[in-house]
Each structure stands twice: as structure tokens, then as C-alpha cells.
Length: 180
Image (cartoon, rainbow, N blue to C red; front, side, top):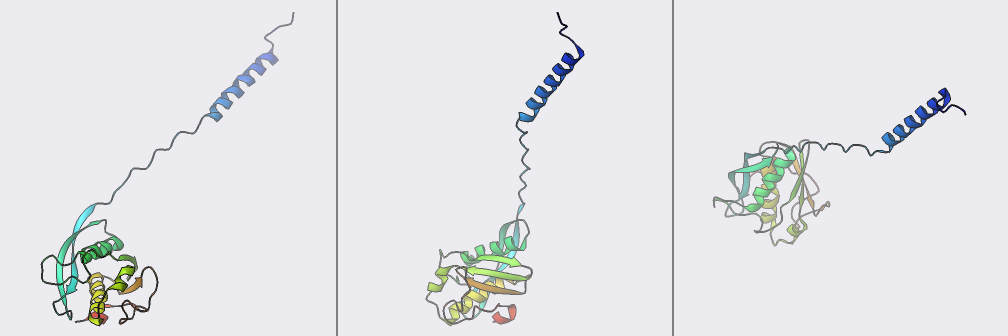
């Protein structure tokens, strides 16, 4: 009778056991990664100056208002300003520039330049040259009150020659373009 536990048989059993262990280890699914901790930016109030129309629609009335902003990025601050601007004046000194319930424009910031996307519904307002100027200039002065160089307007996400047929939208507006 031949011996069962020869060095070759023992070596073969060790290789077999090692290969089964490696196969078992390799076929296990990888451990699930731990998700990163969600870090929300701090919501804090800041004071902004909003520009509205006076009763004659020929000059501006300012209103300082506290708005809540998540973080301090210029884009989030600018969007918070436009959200407050669209709600209209709260203190009753000025007139709302757009009809109540109108959509809020979107704003993007690239360096010192603001890009404002006016909703397509703004082109349906029945305003004259003073009303159109008040929309564009109150937005421009609100955004450029503390920072920024100019504001370029889009209409419904596209370049447009004009909003209501009176003011040029193909060029950016600066503070000097919107003086009283």
C-alpha cells in the first residue's frame, strides 16, 4: 500500500487549499464606500439695496432689505437680490417694476460681469419706453450696487435685440447707463 501523506500530496493539498482561499477572497464583493459627509453652506442674512420705480416711473427709489443667502458666492447673492426685487417693495415708497406673480429672472456671474436671463413673459408686458428702461435699469442698479462692472440681458435664454422694442439688449449695461 502506498503512503497517503507524501511530500508531493501534502504540497498539492496546500496549493489546493490556498487556491480555494484566494478564490473565495477574490469573489467577495468589494466593501461599500462610505459616502462623504453632506456639508451644507451656512444660510445667513445679508443686507442688499434694491431699486424700484418712483410714482412717475422716471427715477429710482431704494429699499434696503435683509435676504437669506446660502453661502457667499456672488451668483447666490445676486439670485437672492433678484428674488427680493421680483417681490417688489415692502415699505410702500416705491412701485413694483414687474406685475405681481411674474417669474424671477435667472442670473449668472462671471468675474465682474452679470448675465440676466429675463423670462420670455417679460416681452409681453404692455410697457412703454419708461417701463422698459425701469425694468432694465432697476435690475442693473440692484446688481451693480456693491460689485460688478456690467449686466448683459438675455430674453428666454437667447440673445434678443430688444425687450419691448425700445431699449438695446445687444450690449451690456453699466451704472452710467442707468443714472436718474
